Image (cartoon, rainbow, N blue to C red; front, side, top):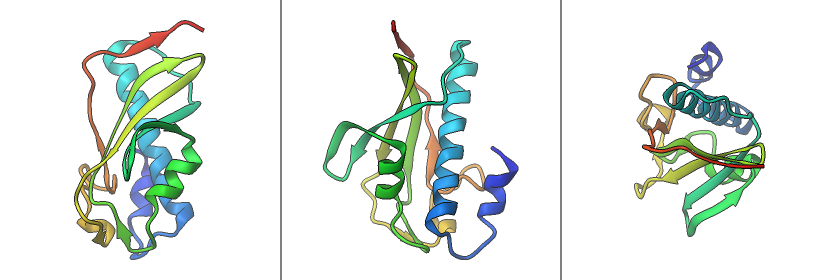
Length: 133
């Protein structure tokens, strides 16, 4: 996890831009985790396979996912699972699942393991899919 993410957690409130930076850092961590586990190199061009809030695997942009996940300066989903799962035509597909828990007040009341990760929980998949371009 980058030093930038850790500094994002210092403030009491988190504006949309800081939250998006935290989300982007979680995407980078997910890509690195898959690269390390499967000895591959992934493009940093993402689509999000979104699960939760009435979506069941819809592919959405990073912007749409960030906008959907951001609830306010001091209200957050407590747990959001995330993992790189697939590469298709130069795009890394990121699995994202919002837990069924109610939103919480304060970033410190989210998953936040390791410290500074906010609601984002890095999960690991058993098999990474690569589809030819």
